[in-house]
Length: 150
Image (cartoon, rainbow, N blue to C red; front, side, top):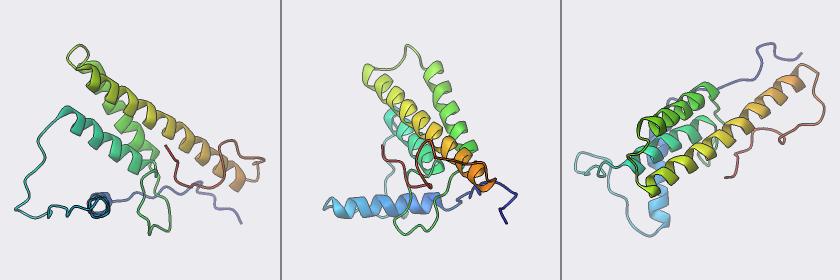
C-alpha cells in the first residue's frame, strides 16, 4: 500500500559534524594535516567569499548534493534550501554596487548553481510523489535521489 504521507524529507541536524569530517578528509587527501577543531584552532579570516561559500555549502547539504560517503539515505529539505537561496538573493540586492567583480561573479555563480539544483530536486520529489500515487510514467529529471553532479 503506498505511503499517504508523500515524499519523506529528512532533516539532518548533524550537518556541522559531517562538514567538519569532510573538510578533514579533503585536507588529508590533499596531503596536509588539518588544523584541529579544538580551542587552539584560529578561525579563518572573515571574508565575503567565505560567507557566500558557507551559505552555498549549507544549501547544497539541504538539497542532498553534498552527502557523506557512508550515507544510506539522501537528506533533502527544500524549505531550508529555498531559505538559503532567498538569503543569498537578499545579500546580492543589499550589496549591489559594493562588491568587486570577483565577488559579484562568485555570488551569481553560487546562486545559479543552487537554483538549478533546487529545481532538479523539486522535480524529483514531485515525480516520486506521482509514482507513489500511481500516476507516474517516465521520470522527467532522472530516477531516485542520487546526488546531483554540479
